[in-house]
Structure formats: structure tokens, C-alpha cells
Image (cartoon, rainbow, N blue to C red; front, side, top):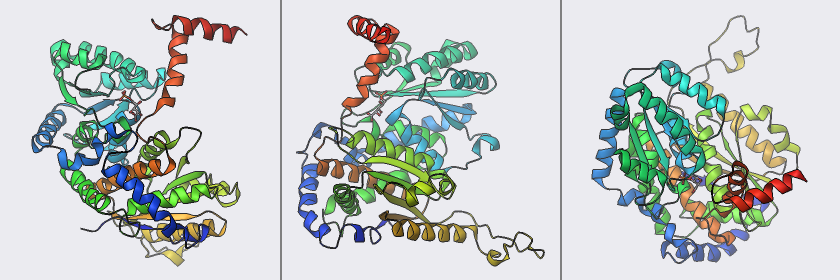
Amino acid sequence: MMQLKIDISNGKPFIGDKCLPRYQEEVDKCHQMLVNRTGKGNDFLGWMDLPETIEEEMINRINEDAAWIRAVAEVFVVIGIGGSYLGSRAVIEALGNPFQGLIGRKGHPLVIFAGENLSEDYHANLLELLDHKSYAVAVVSKSGTTTEPAVAFRLIKKHLEDKYGREEAGKRIFAITDARRGALKNLADNRGYVSYVIPDDVGGRYSVLTPVGLLPIAVAGFDIRVLLDGARQMREIALRSSDCEQNPCAMYAAFRNIIYRNGKFIEILVAYEPTLLYFIEWWKQLYGESEGKENKGIFPAGVTFTSDLHSMGQYIQEGMRTIFETVVSVEQPAKTLHIPDDPDNIDGLNFISGKRLSEVNRMAELGTMMAHVDGGVPNIRITIPAINEYTIGQLIYFFEFACALSGYALGVNPFDQPGVEAYKKNMFALLGKPGFEKETENILKRIEK
Ligand code: PA5
């Protein structure tokens, strides 16, 4: 099977030839920490084995539930935030037709997302849409207590019960949460919802290969076995060796840590396929939450080209020289489109007539890479042969494993996110949540000043 490749030749001039071999020892240590489970956060390493440990029975169950949902629903609403929605959205959008919402084929429900924001307009518009659609819901929360999805679920549950009655609504709700704890677990048990467990040792942003990602992906009509196969193949490569020349995860983790120490504090993940927009969002969360702590870490940003060459392109070419780019490059599109010849040639485009649009896109990619490197922006390229379940599975595992290695190289715990609590504390204090009385008093005084 063709596999993901990494090319750092356009990054190397920025770090020098000797740097990587010198850094290998550091990578070996981090790799050992990870595979021997001796590093920080080692009680959250379940994601590492998911492609192997997921049971056949679980895959069958997910596929059966997905088939039922596909038969009864025009819309499947996935309620969750952060790691509880970004992975499924990333995969569904990467593999899907960008115009899926307008195609509306029977038996192919549109998967849409809720509870990833607190916008009144967003949720009111969603409920208005659901008035006219048959639908089912997945509510996803590892902790089972996160405010945004809990609020969205309360709204949607009421809508669903009003529409179908409590009994039928209960059949259309799928709860994906912790095995034992949390308000969602209690609600699911109390109402008898079909439930899936998020393993204790898998954190939100590493959970796409659990039912969190797999159920919505299967509902969208994609082959979760092939997705897992791709991840499994990358797992073998990732675990087998820590040698940067053999293991692309090790190479990526090493490169980004070396370049960070050379003053490149911002990494931009670039894609030339707009369907990868949410893959970039998933990657931003994975790296931002895993590494951005203790006043350290590369800031993960993302762009889709060529669109963003007409917005962010100026900055990347000539702004502060603290950035580097990682391009996710796709060799072959799934479809074929030739640029037609036009005898009038008023637009002057006959010099590219007969070419495939992907060839023009490829030249844009090559030309941009050269311009950015000339402008002082190191460039790494991660190439996949095409976008499909297998390669997306590979990419997921590649970025997860590299993130864990990279976090260890940085010296942080890549599996916690203590900083996410700060805004919650203030929000609860401002909303007068029971148990936050002292905080409410303090925050109100602070506002009065
Ligand atoms: O990666 C993480 O752990 C977080 O981004 C969580 O996924 C996010 O905060 C949602 O948490 P929960 O699934 O508990 O609702």
C-alpha cells in the first residue's frame, strides 16, 4: 500500500545538515518514553493502540447503528466540542462532497454539528431546520459535563421529544461518553439511550478512532475499517523505529522542535484541497492543546491555498520571519477536470487549455513553496497519494504519534489541557453557578472597578 511521505529538503537549509543527526538521540529518548509508557501523561496512551485494540464486535455495532440512522434520518446532529467533534468533522469533510448539503440523497444523511459554540442564532437556525427534517443525534462528551454540548443537548433533546415523543426520541439519541462518570452518563442510563464508551485512557483530541469519530464517520457513509487499516499501517511504522530516516513521525517531531529552537514559533499547516479545512482545525487543536503550556510551544495556524494566498499570503511572504509551513500535499484528485480550449481566448487562458485543473493547482503549490522558502519560510511537505479513508487514517495516526513525540521533546505533558479551565471558571462565576459563590463575588467586584 502506498504510504504517507515526508520531505524536509526545503526545511533543511534553515537548520543546517548536522542538526538532525545530532537531535536523533533526543528523539530516541522520547520514542522510548512513549512506547515504554514512562513519560508524562502515560495514563492517556490508549490512542496509541486503538487501531489494534478496537474489537470486530465494536466495528460491527457501529456500522449497524450507522445503517439504522441512515435509514431513519435525513440529518444526523453531532453535539460536542473540541476533541468531541473536530475529528469526525475533519474526516467527514475531507472525504465528502463539499456540496453534500445540497445533494440531499435519500439514505445519505447530512452530518451537522452543534454544541461547539454558544451562539443563539446558530442553534435557533438549527432547530428551525430540524422542524422540517427527520433526524437523529449523537451527544459526545468524555467528561459528560462540558457546558456547550450540555446546553445544545438540552435544546435539541426537547425539540426531538416534542417532535417524536419521548420514547421514539430516546431511540434516536446516541450517547458517547465515559464508562462511569458525568452528567451525560447519568442521563443516558436514566433514559436508556444507546451508549458508547470513550476509553478512560484516551483524551478528547486523540479520540477520533473511538466511537467519538467512528459513529459519525460511518453515518456519513465512509468505511471505518479502511480508516482503521490506514491508521494501523502508520502505527506499525511509528512504533517500529525511532530513526528519523525510517519513521516520518520522528522526522516531523524532530524538525519542528529544531526549527522552534531556531526562532520559528508559528507553524502553518497548509492544504491545497479545501475539503481539508477541518482537518487543519483538528490538527490545530491536537497540537495547540498538547504543546501550548508552561509558556512554551509552537503556535499552530492553518491556511487553505490558493484561497488564502490572497489573504494570508502577503504575511507569509514578507511578514515577521517567525513562521514555518507544513504542507499536506495530495498527489491525485479523485475526479478529472480538463480546462477547455476557447477559440476566442479573450481571457488569455489558452496557454493552460487541455491541462487538468490539478496540474495548475500543483504548479501553484510548487511555485508558492519556492517563493516562501526564498522569503525565509522553511517548508516541510507531507504527501499522500490521494484523499481516501486509508490515507486519512494514516494522516491521523501520523499527526497523533508525532504530536506525542514532539510534546515530549518540548518537555511538556502532551495529554493534559489545564489552561482550558480558566475561562470556564470565570464563565461559571459570571453565570452564578452553584458552588462558585466566592468566584462570583470576586469577579463582580473586578468588573465594578
Ligand atoms: O482534547 C480535549 O480533551 C478537549 O478538547 C475536549 O475534547 C473538549 O474540551 C470537550 O470535552 P468533553 O468531551 O469532556 O466534553
